[in-house]
Image 1 (cartoon, rainbow, N blue to C red):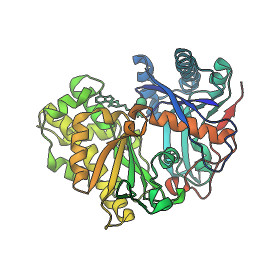
Image 2: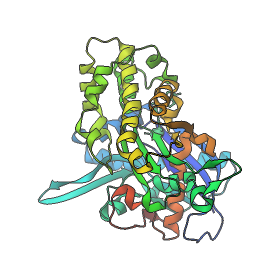
Image 3: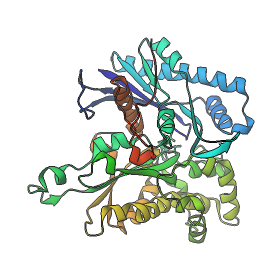
Length: 401
Ligand SMILES: Nc1ncnc2c1ncn2[C@@H]1O[C@H](COP(=O)(O)OP(=O)(O)O)[C@@H](O)[C@H]1O
Ligand SMILES: [Mg+2]
């Protein structure tokens, strides 16, 4: 069966479509091997991006516009999938579409006398199904929240399949390669940065996953504010600045970075307000220094989270740890150089998801193709140890064509 996975993340930069093939009748307990056939990226037109960002700011959004955006995104997702399928001459069987998160609050808060955790992804599945003539699985997160989880992260399901190093469990020691199995960290750097830690030989239930903090979100907003540019292409501006270490040390003292996993973040934590304060704190520094500091904040908060929460799980004796990076942040060489230095100090090697056959920008789209596959076969695909859910849950809603 051929499935299109569709992702548009908190960066609101555009739509990623991955075409994935899975063997027919794959009904085993574990998701089977898949083949990535193609991946394409479609930037949002500037007015659409502007509208998405404006509506993420819940206080300013009109209900009518939210309803319109839901149907508009349905059309745009369908067009992106249709284009990709046509270009690669593929006939689809199913679509898995994450949608655009407008609001995510994974921790329960009081509302009208009840404590509720809530999440909201938009992009109408019924529209996608109608346009493409195939069933669509969408709205993956609510089922995990209903099961007591934070609704995020969901990608650990794919991370585990991709990166668990089975050598340890299966054979103890790989004599040919002369190595023992590795502990691995899948680090995605989208708008927000999140990791999945997979101890060598771990079962799915031993996987740890959480948001480390800002990914590209703060860097992007600083670039927009100070240079009127969407992002720091190839990390050039950051490379020309100096990191304000005092600012980083101060910022890392914030409550979020001390929260124990599972924890999730979004524009609610690292959006406009946060960036406004960030720029204020950097007052007096040159513009490139501010960008360099925003870049270092991402690298250091990742390393900090790994040292605090992940290494204790990996055990101190084994030092063959790997971090495998994906997401748009992997395209920023300045960020990658900073991250490489930070984690080298922790005994961790830096790698890229491309080395495992998944282009950095395609990984989350691939994940939603696989999650849709599980849902189609009525299998759960949340990872309770990652989301904090009380039980496994079948994710998503199906729109039939
Ligand atoms: N060539 C590049 N140089 C620097 N940063 C890049 C480059 N390409 C992509 N990015 C960064 O990646 C971001 C998009 O990452 P993505 O993984 O799509 O995030 P999300 O999942 O939140 O949509 C961009 O906003 C930008 O900050
Ligand atoms: Mg994106």
